[in-house]
Image 1: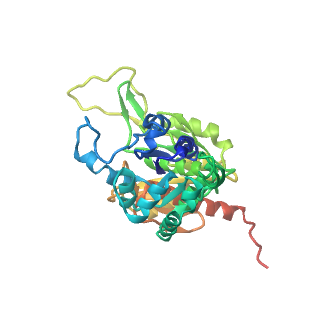
Image 2: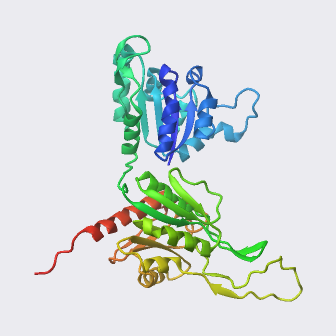
Image 3: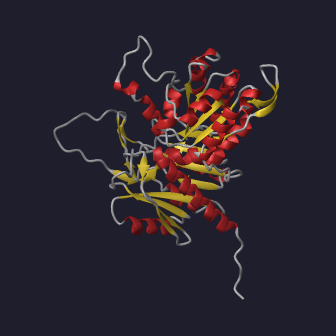
Length: 408
């Protein structure tokens, strides 16, 4: 998930650098927005190096930079892609501007343009914190749904003692997780996950593959790690970055993927096989590049190993999730796959539907569970789909662990 971290001009601004690291350790992608005052305490380069993201400092292009439409509406783009706006430290000045709707820099304009939840962690002199104007602004922001992480009490940089110190990282992270309704309900679980396509060689320069981007599998991996699981991901070729906290093993072919999954299967408690594994491979790939000719060329294909069916035979108490990318009869094909492969859950979609399928950021799926439950989902982001899949996994896991009462 993406968090925009607003850093304002107070002595506690240096603590925001530590907060960036803490957010990353909790599997958030962080982009920093700095006010002019913040740059008097910490340089943008510090946050750029820590976050790996562009640091935004001005509403308009700086002197010497080429002005363009993209820079002019950047606050709208950031507002649309952020999942939460966190301001830490938040000065009395920024609280007043937020409360009164003043938009005179990037951060205040972003606040008005965003519909994402907002968390602010104030830090200031104790008298400024206790002032009636500040408390009135705090009260007004709370009525508008802004979450306030109250400052700690203690010795302040100004030499006074009292409330005003920036809250601790754990308090701020807890508030963020609470606002985003993020759970740690997969702690103690080990998830083995596959993602992406496979490449089956024709010759040294050509291969058979499919249109999978890996986005769905990577979204599930990121969500599982964020919810506390140990995640081992066997990934086919993709340009996606490995999510924070995920152990990734790179493979090319279906055979390699099958070997890596089989080798790690005994370590997992949940297997989620989201990869689009090739069903066929060339029986005898050429050792040298096949030259172009005038006559038609035939390739002899042979089936690859069915990874889902293979591990399902030895699943024991593990829970197994498979995926079905279909173009017709989605429900019938998914239920057939569920039964034939001995899976606990099949996540199926019609890849021809608008907003679903390969290389989209959204998906439209129906989950078919072993206990007979069918759960159709509307179009939503793949991150949201990932969360719903994990919710269903936990429901099934709880059912497996609940002793069945015998009839009397």
